[in-house]
Length: 296
Length: 296
Image (tube, rainbow over all chains, first blue to last red; front, side, top):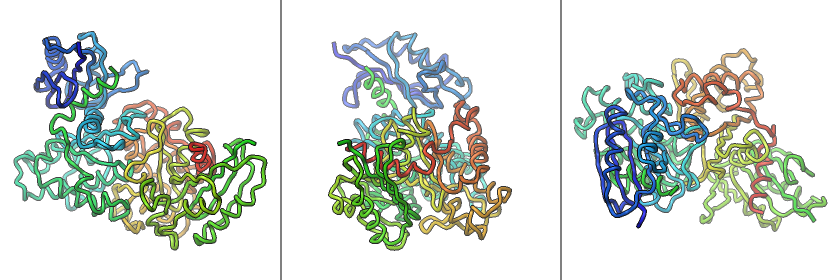
């Protein structure tokens, strides 16, 4: 019997669970809102327990919002750590899923998972040095260097880099509970809603919010390019549903780097350097499948 | 006959050339100021041609200031690209050394080289995820992820990340010819000298320059931690000769991260997380030896 893998994209707003082996071979899927840890994880367990397909479910991957403890030597390995999300702090998401399903479980951040999936099957094919950034309610980034996911001390928290903030042009103080006006504090969906009084999806395309959003995202992406020199940057998340945003981000990134990063990929062909996901909204869930495949 | 390796640390101020196999086995060394490419590289060639030791010189490594073209498919592979250093733009440092000595030559940035040497023999032993930052006339950073040097599009240019700059507290505009007030533009030795009217080494330990310097460096290091999550950060370069600077940088880095990066390595033991080089002033030159060893 062929092996199949379970993927859990654990997001702050919704959970996506899928079963299969890759983007062209998915046999089951469910989506539900993120509520309490107990209720949400019970729905995850019920979904996988209810699976009755042909393939044998061999390993589960979790691509989760964080921060996560990913130190395999830590007693809290696989726990969500200090999230501001009510009820979820210190949730042992890996342990609960593992003991309920009796299967091996792999875990990484949602954005590291998405980077891996885009590397294997999507817009990052062919590059071993890739960054995936999501710009939604929050901002996160993950990636691969030399073909391996970026870990070390913990895992990347790219949304929390600090960037220039001109308070005369933008008096909004930022909304990150830890850092105030870090990238996420200034440019996340939550920041946009608090600054302009309505959610990003209700702001017209010519609203000044989008110029400002592109400005902050380009500052953040420029910093990521200077630090990691990725071969490509894949950008996902809700705010990019506005199709005018990404072209502005590309233009400003090129402007801010000002020719110093001397690659025609940026100076002449940035449209193919900062790109949208090849896997649409499935980067995270397929990332969870990819994490499971890597080990099993 | 045993193999030995040649190492060239090509700096903007001086060149260091060494011959040996590692920190405990160096048999020849020379240092000379960086002048024109012709004169400087001729001195390099003369040094290696004059070597008459017991070991057979097998491979040369170059750890060079940059930016460099490190794309092995590029016709300009191994060239210094767009440096503001007069005369050095588009210098084929790899090609000239290679054809003059008739030996294989490896090249990477000075800071990637230093990171590799610290990883093999110095303060980065035991971690596969390491960043090396130098704070001297300029600011640069390199590193390893998963045990491999960071490359991708080109190579890291960590000195050129943008950081918050409060012009009321610090009206100095920054001195980076490409970005104005990027990290290097605000916190390099050149910036310190231009802002305060005298070189950093002439400023007393209680001069307000050092608080400000620590502030900018901590912002930069916080960004690097959020982006790369390195297991350790090694800091070298002339400005750290002031022993009061690094403790301030550590304190402010911990303060700015504000507990979000939830690791006791930062919250409780940052003195062993942001550290000085284990190889003293030899990280770069030994990095060149390490680059040569890797290939030959």
